[in-house]
Image (tube, rainbow, N blue to C red):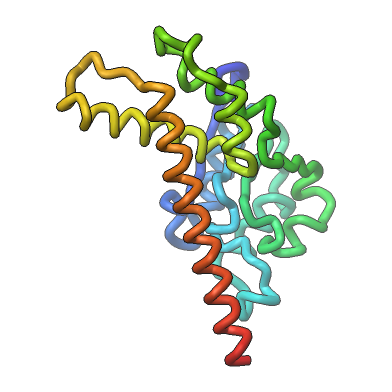
Amino acid sequence: ILMSQMDCTFIYITSDTIQERGQIGNLYDLARSLSPTVIVIEDIDTLGAIDRQHGGGDHPLLGEFLNCLAGVEKNNGVITIATTNFPKHLDRALVDRPGRFDLRLDFGLPDKELRETIFKKYLEGIKDRSKIDYNKLATLTDGMTGAHLKEIVMLSYTQALEDADYCKNTKVSYKGLLAASQTLISNREKYQYQVKKESEISAMHL
C-alpha cells in the first residue's frame, strides 16, 4: 500500500537479502544516496535482531544494524519500517532505545466484521456471491488471521478444481468454503494439541 501511494525509493529487505556482515551498511548507504527512501524489513527477528538474553550473545548482524539506525551516519530522508510476529524476541536495544524505532503499531487478529470484509475481498470475482453466508464464515473462523482466510479460499478452489477435473471455468462454492473452513479448524486443533503435549513433556523433564 505504501509503495503504491508514495513517490520515493523503496528498499525491501528479508532474511534472504542479508547473508553476511557489511550488507546492511551497504543498503543504508544506498538508501541515503537515493533518498527520500523507505526501508522495509520483513520479519526483523529473522535477521538476527533477537534478544541477546536468550540468544547466547551478540548476533553478528545486530551491532551493524543498530549502528545503521542510530550511528555516526545521519539518516536524513530515510525511514525504516520493520515487521515481526514475535516482538518479544527483539533485542531491547532495538525496541527500547529512542532514535531507532520511535513508533510501534500492533495489529491484532481481525474481528468478525473485518473477517467478513476479507472474505468478500477474496471472493469478489465469484458470480453467485449472494449464496454465500459471510456471517457464518466469519463466525466459524473466529481467532484466525487474514492468511488463514486466504488459505480457506485457496483450499476450496483447489478442491473444486479436482472435483471438476481441472475445468477452467471452475468456481468456488459456499459448500466448498465451509468444508475448507472445517479442514483448517481441524488442522489448527491438531497443531495446538501437539504443541500442548510437547510442552507437557518438556515440563516433565525439567
